[in-house]
Figure 1: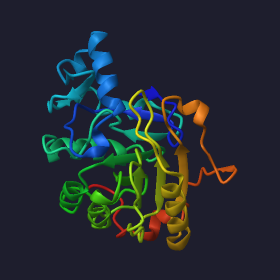
Figure 2: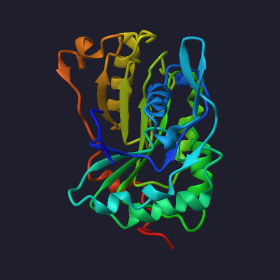
Figure 3: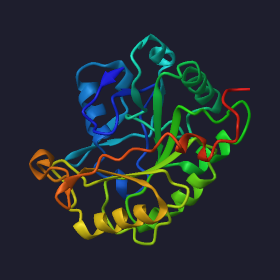
Amino acid sequence: MAETSIEWTDATWNPVAGCTVLTAGCTNCYAMRMAARLDAMGQTKYRGLTRRSGKRWVWTGKIRLDHSSIETPKAWARPRRVFVNSMSDLFHADVPARFIARVWATMRDTPRHTYQILTKRPDRMADILSQKPFAVLPNVWLGTSVEDNRVLFRLDDLRRVPAAVRFVSLEPLIGSVAEANFTSIDWAIVGGESGPSARPMNPIWVREIEEMCRKTGTAFFFKQWGGKNKKAAGRTLNGRTYDEMPSERSFSKHDDGISGLG
């Protein structure tokens, strides 16, 4: 477990490491830079997962399953919000369904924690979680990343996912998503890209999302403006901070009545 400064969670848990660049939102992925740094520090879990490409580090496409960390959350006594696989994607094609089932079992057995799983592959997430032995867990929130209008189809895939809470991360927001449909999406996180090569985020795009969230009853969380110095840019919008989270009512909104693995 690693404590984290990510505003919408408390800790990270990474039973998988490594990924593959998929769409434009992956271009400046912080996890690629972090994996390269951890490799340089001698952490074998991240060895060979990135390669140098020009002035940046990119994923090699290799995936590493960390079997030793599967049951780590069981040792955490204090309830936490846990971001699952901040350094990978649990639903990457090279992560076996049987391994995902082991992750599911740990989350089922630790209902004191709230788990937040984010994927750029909600189509595979929907297909796997619709099968046995998977079932809806009230302490597991399932989400997808959407960076601009070109990947809005991910929201349709996410709506197929059996989940207690569905959410979307619009970070890095690199284009308008004015055509998005947030129906049946409980939570939207919005953030600009940060780092030395950060692409700018238009305030109009952010306000479009906030207005759409009001229409669908989607909780709106504004994470950051981003940029080269994200702390200086801050995270206020319309003169205030938006830290909305899904309400407890969301836990039963999409639940099919199943609460554990079969």
